[in-house]
Length: 426
Image (cartoon, rainbow, N blue to C red; front, side, top):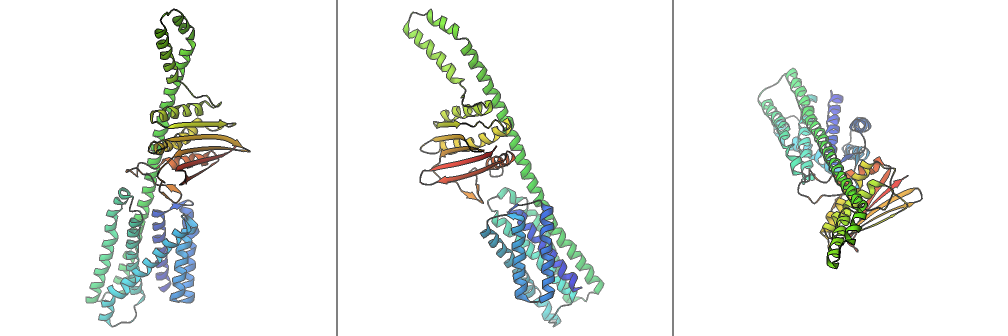
């Protein structure tokens, strides 16, 4: 019975830890692989528990398995991994102390027992794990306090573990008044075990659904972005065709000018032609039609926003990248640059594309008066609707990886500039 009891407790600790990690960190690998790689740690911890039966050793082992679970399966800075491990360890022992020292002190005083039977000990431990789970999930809400809309959907789920906790307390109260048979006690323990697994399982399942929902929203945003760019490219193509028509009709313009006698009339006519040509002008820097169209798009947009837009393209044209992928990467880079530069004093953007050995290096530099906030190497969106925005950087990273590229960024405080760099390996 003791082996079964301790085994159940370690399973609960494993599920609680994984549930916490899934909510606050990005995974390094698939969820199933995380379970396979980390669950043996808890089996080893259980073996050490019976081998030493020492509180200090068990405390150290608990700390280590919590840390290794985070380190093996999740992406996070090492100092945060240590902090999260400390949180989990503290909550683990606080929840046990609450039940053993407070809730069940009355039970011990009435029966005058200094030790509990195996079923009673298991009941105590299960109840403490329910409290442990509640505290851990509340910690998640504190860590993710900025994601208010995402947290709201988890709040109703707390009803289940709280009811389970109250149910356990009520059973203890009845145990003071009535003597339950062993069969009745074991039945309640089985119900408690199932109840606790369901509590944790529902949160884990809801967390996975939330993760899938975020991926779906990201995909929808991505699709909208692609459709928007396709539409814009069609507009640019149309403008390009119209410009060619204007140039093709240059003989007629010459004839019209030749028939004019008034200098002012000639001047006005030439100005109108120049304006038409300028309106439809497409930058021609490379042999990559899509890249030229994109640079033309942002030349117009920067001009409309009073931003100086400089381009320097040498020896590289990224013609080996799919047009759709290139559009998503360039547009996200320059959308972010335009947004920041338009709010700055200098109002400048520079784009550089050059080949260095076997690499093509794309660099976008924009003026930016306020250093962007970042977390875990990712820029935090400044927009109010955080659930609908903030996908730009993820899209850049996603399509950089897809095209065998590395994406880096940094902010230079002394120059008030933000620099984005994509390095493509040919």
